Length: 329
Image (cartoon, rainbow, N blue to C red; front, top):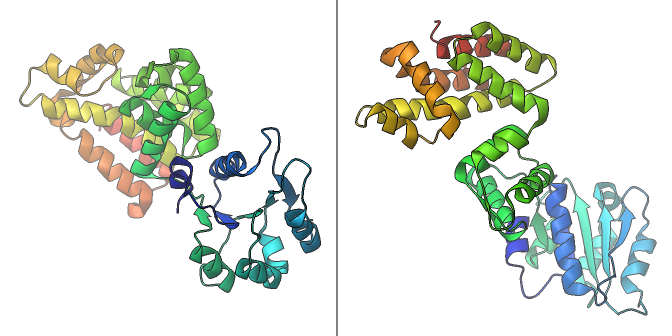
């Protein structure tokens, strides 16, 4: 079971032994908080936590068996438990055969080979919770659900896509930015793409938008200078490719819609931000329909090249793409 499913619809019967696998700490913390609410009697009670590299088996088993004056259920978490599992595998297998009746043990692990006896034991009673990176539609759904359920706001499709392009897939960082955006639009409000563009991402995000604006405004030297600044500061070329694609795919859609719709209507229906419509209209008129109709092809070819389809350095591939989008090549 993935952690998002566990948090959204937790099972009625909770396993007494769980392994949280993967590298998404935000998801792991959500699962632990969910379990603490279900298991611990006192609202102020917190899980007992041990550092996996320092904890001994005796410490952990004693804590599981301890009866507290505040209640007889314990939630024991071993953080970074890979080394702990290696050192105590036999004892953990015995515990999995006969788990505690009321207490719950959580192992926070990065690696969890499914072929081991311990992994099979834990999986048999539904104790493996996958806390791995979300991608594609699953990440978009998580963002939309978090905006609604945690922050009380709506998140537009454009805003979700732009957040992912600007921030990446780290859920903790995404949730922090969601909280900031939710505070800005207020409870019950809607986070639009324009809010993300204005409020998220710091100078790198601003420089990326400045770069794409410069391409559309025929300021190629400024666009290449912004690209140089971003790459020089360590921004990943693939991430920059994502930002460029996010902007120009809408321009490509406007071009396609203009085949059957009046030009101004095509611009409005393409998903462009309102303040972009005039700029994009001028841009398309400047480069002309033949080059406009190659925008999508240019993006697809560049994306394929960045994923190993070209022997050119990534920097040069991005420079060539900006030149083509600017109508210069």
